[in-house]
Length: 136
Image (cartoon, rainbow, N blue to C red; front, side, top):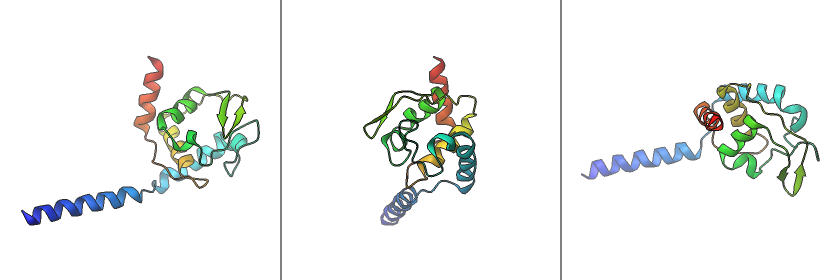
């Protein structure tokens, strides 16, 4: 009984350590970076700081680090009139629904883990679920 308790404790500790030190896979980050450079960089800039009144910063904002569903919806549907750090951005961001679920997941994982950000990865399945919810 004691050995079973020790094994369970070790499994829980290992899982906790693994989860807390989560790093997205390098191939996901590389694909996400390439997509960011082709799809996002012109407005959000190479450093993720954006452009005043044009495109908001992607650095440590609730939009980037918060609920993944909201971020996915922004990419799928586009947005205008977004308020970030007290500034409203009326320049419309077009929808990027032409990108695959995997491409959107990769670029959002890149954004959520670049520019000083640290957040969980976005999966293709999460994007698929939001895309399906949009159709309802």
